[in-house]
Image (cartoon, rainbow, N blue to C red; front, top):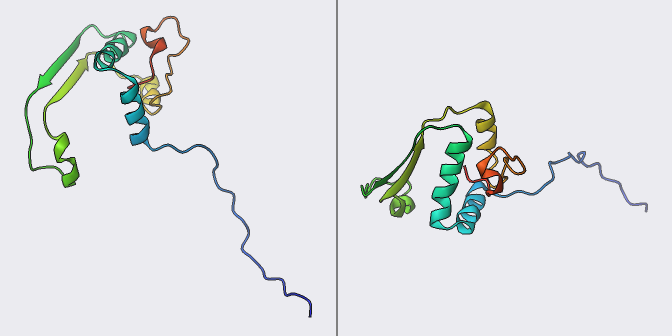
Length: 119
């Protein structure tokens, strides 16, 4: 007897490409930077954005017990904040979604043209 051909649902095309979770990308960028380089990158970002002020605040505050999920409790302690007074532009909104991409690369007017793209 001849084999019976079964009808199958059509194969739907799927997006193809590299997939890297944001947390993995951030971990890799942070690993590639030293502590001083992180502050330098933030200062370069402020300069490139035309900021007139750049401030750093070290907070020793701890927020124990309020983490949700509880696995984040270790991250509820002291923090280093960086602030500048530059206005966020449409290009900044596009760039912040491209962590590790270095959107200033090759732009001689940007201090951060050699950075790794840490927003």
